[in-house]
Length: 348
Image (tube, rainbow, N blue to C red; front, side, top):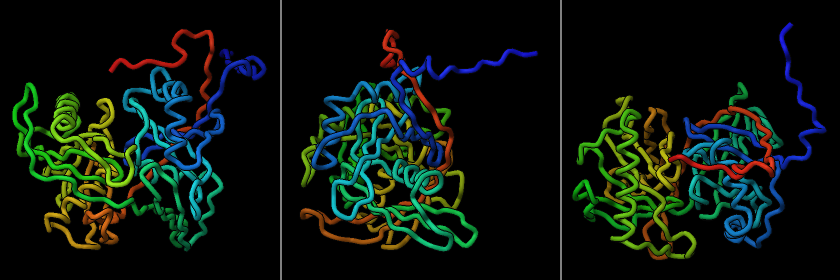
């Protein structure tokens, strides 16, 4: 007879407990916190984000860092809504801190809520969901077809081009031409084909190192100021673009290196949003034209321009982003206060 380990619930009650539902969108993980956080005060979502940064950052480390997470883990905390007409708020976290917007996170959160929680989406119907994100109000759509299959998309915040065709010298590499565009976060876009950098998983180490170096060089070369919110004026990452795709019908491939060297496994929801603003700026796409953008692992998101508008004096677009998410687990994490590594660590 084999030995069977059986947990004694009364003995684990002494530990701090955090419960999550884990998912992925096109390969990129999202750990959604269900329980274990205290109430997060703040009159708006940016104030709530500042509270997480100043008062609860140790919990981010618990869930994002090893041994419970890893250097490329991503998370989200849902809050009560802070603006009229919204269904909930969302705060995003990663290995370095807190992001302003996350497209794969929106798709995963809406999918998990509709498939496994209390967000009702009837067969042959479409539901509109308002979400308060640090970058602004997001409108998501959850639609079930006649067979009950769920499709999720969202309209992002106003996305625009900041600057085009600047050149910066990257230590140890040389001159690199870049563009900056905003899609809920600012990215420096670099043509990987032009600098002979491969955008597949076998080249992840070079992409991480070069992406980090480009990010820091661009930050020094071009300081960012968001038109309306001081908290949003920072460069989030580097996105390498390539015309070398797995599917001939795909427009391009993205490899996003963000935060502290994280590699997005998806094409990056905010990244495809800023990219389509950049493509529209150059006259390479039309309003309503949907394009397919692949990721480092060959998964894909689709993006189109839902609307053109002026945003604080800038020509902007509202991108509509499409992607698919799946559940990977439900976890109860425990924190032993006697554990010297209770708040985690990162090797990379």
